[in-house]
Length: 190
Image (cartoon, rainbow, N blue to C red; front, side):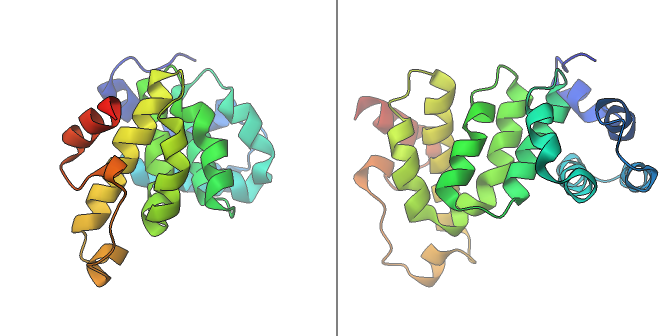
């Protein structure tokens, strides 16, 4: 199994075949359901794969998937973390290695898997991720600044967000109320 080199390759992965090979102990019912979901969008397939893996194998597959040579399998680990019942601080600690993964796809899956939890508790997320902005890894710094700012910016404009229901909610000057690119610049310069 190889890592996908492009987004097109990421999107073309046959999840059923990969699941059968990466997790040979998974049941045939799970594989059949994964096959039925093959025509859905990539995010829905990632969530479906994570749900099926958790239902069939529990969290025991998480470590193995997190170290798998396939970027898609590592992405399933991200979505398992995203679906787990855990406090935000623990969830971010669990997703951190994926946010620093060598593969662009896994880094994107890590963000997508935890995004709903970041936007649900934006103030805590920003407080936790602020410390990540000093990390030696540029990938961790980027996740912390760009991704958390994107969550803040998205939550800020979402009519369903906490900010929409409470327009007086303010963010720290560290995460100024400007488009995400400007936030990255201001984070980098202090």
